[in-house]
Amino acid sequence: MPQISKLETMITAGNFIITAEFLPLPGADSKAAETASGFLKDRPAAVNVADNPHGPILSSLAGSVILEKSGIEPVYQIVTRDRNRIALQSDLLGAAALGIKNVLCLSGHHQTLTGSRQSASVYDIDSIQLLAAVKQMNDDGVLLDGTKIAGDFKVLAGAVATPDMKPLELNMIRLTKKVAAGARFIQTQAVFDLDAFAGWIKKANQLGITSKTAILAGVMPLESAAEAESLREKYTDLVIPDSVIDRLKAAGDAAAQAKEGMAICIETIKKIQSLDGVRGIHILSGGKEHRVPEIVKAAGL
Amino acid sequence: MIVAERKSIPDLVEILQDHKKILVLGCGTCVTVCLAGGEREVSIISSALRIASNIHGLDFEIEELTIERQCDNVFIEEATDAINRNDAVLSLGCGAGVQALAERYAKKPIYAGLDTAFIGILEDRGIWAEKCAACGACVLHQYGGICPITRCAKQMLNGPCGGSREDRCEVRPDRPCAWQLIYHRLKGIGQLERLTEIAPPKNWEPGHGGGCRVIVREDHRI
Ligand code: SF4
Ligand code: SF4
Image (cartoon, rainbow over all chains, first blue to last red; front, side, top):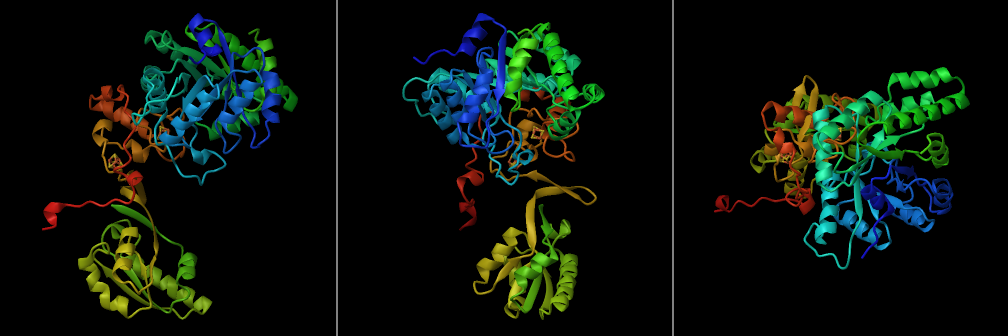
């Protein structure tokens, strides 16, 4: 039988969970992943490997395997943007065969938001259908076309959520479906608006969602006001309030702004930790893996 | 209707430069309605080509004609003489019209003068928007009459992506998120429960996923 992941064990045990994100480089060198793994060792229970968020980089499957080899448990991210159901299921089988135990199913930012905007649109299945496919592979040992999987297959499936997405009713319909489709954990987009997040998690508590899945709240250390402004301009799922940007600006020069960004991140973690229904923190390092140990330490995680 | 847009005059000049006698052939159906390839546009494009011909010394001799429907052999017939007396045809029909001509006139170069874009409607003055991707197995009844395949940039069938905003799609600030529209529409007609069920993966075979499509109606073949 395949082994149960550390992440799954912690979810079942009810521990407070830290996960982080690793963004591979557009290169064929495993060194970058190994260097990043130096920063990500020890504290995070598992580390996500991003699936081409801004255009082609080292594949998330290869990145996951490299992390696994360096002793870090990966969460293999898989977006439905670039691969049809044939490729998705094939990659899932391959991942499981290579020892990957956690997958995160998401639709991914649209290709026109990446550097490869001329790319064809795939979106054969959506993120909820991918979760349901993984569930079927896990529970029934069967692929979408009815083919029986040879041997064992077992992975822990997770999904993403955007607490800022409105209206709340629609947001909850989507979250409920993700959990019904088999998401055992949910990593959220970075939280900056704590009131909005508190309202969201309260609703998820009321609907009984938080007792069925482990919600890990996303946090992101901002580097500067300029970075924050360009991120929120480009990605509609990243809602950064003006108050956060004003605080960064008021901090002063580049070094002071980066320090303030870190302080905001730590404050956010502390406030999130006190909310009912939150089972952990997901550190969206966005390629700044070296900042993860600092965040973990400063937040006293 | 089929919505199309005119290619630029420099592009058309490049396509046509090796020919002298050119028929600019308009179509009186969809592309007339979307102001891309009807009689009026035939006249405008022909004038522009004549001017370009003078500037570049190309000796174009342009003839103008518009027929009712280029995708229909009955109407194409009306253009036969004009097609025969010219060296090439610049069709202002949609992609289907251009190919219908090319299939019928094997020895005549037929060029597309338009970029055929989508099946859509006139949403507002001067704004045409895509509404149907001709997937071959319509699911509009499940989504309150708003097509997630066409109008959601990620053709999500189970709800919005994380980038959905109440006032826009993640992909374009000037377009609404289809899923916000679907949500409000289903709520308005008392069918919101349709969204709680998980829609299975779509069968794309009746669509372009199954290869170039053909419909055979035996009852019309006798
Ligand atoms: S479901 Fe298919 S046929 Fe119906 S409107 Fe959408 S694309 Fe067109
Ligand atoms: S924002 Fe809405 S319409 Fe745009 S891709 Fe996401 S769900 Fe689809």
